Amino acid sequence: MPKKIPLRMCIGCREHKPKKELIRVVKSPDGEVSVDLTGKKSGRGAYVCRNEACLRKAQKSRQLERALECSMTQELYDRLAQEIAESEDEE
Image 1 (cartoon, rainbow, N blue to C red):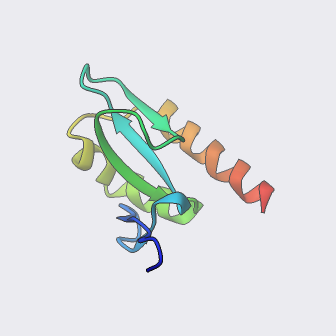
Image 2 (cartoon, one colour; image 1 turned 90 degrees about the vertical axis):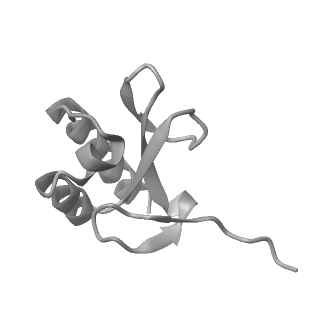
């Protein structure tokens, strides 16, 4: 039997995709919000596609704030945009 691929929903486009294709944003138990590229940090997580349009949509509709139950800094959005740009360069 083939190994099951974990799916997660992108908060921008609301599509289910393999976990590896998405970028995880995590709010740690002490309230710090960061980009989790390993997908292993403890805390509440939200996923966004490696796609500029999805990130903009999530930012505009404040989906990250809702999912993580906290306010987001522009710095964090910039960091996510940078990650997306870097992952597009690799392809």
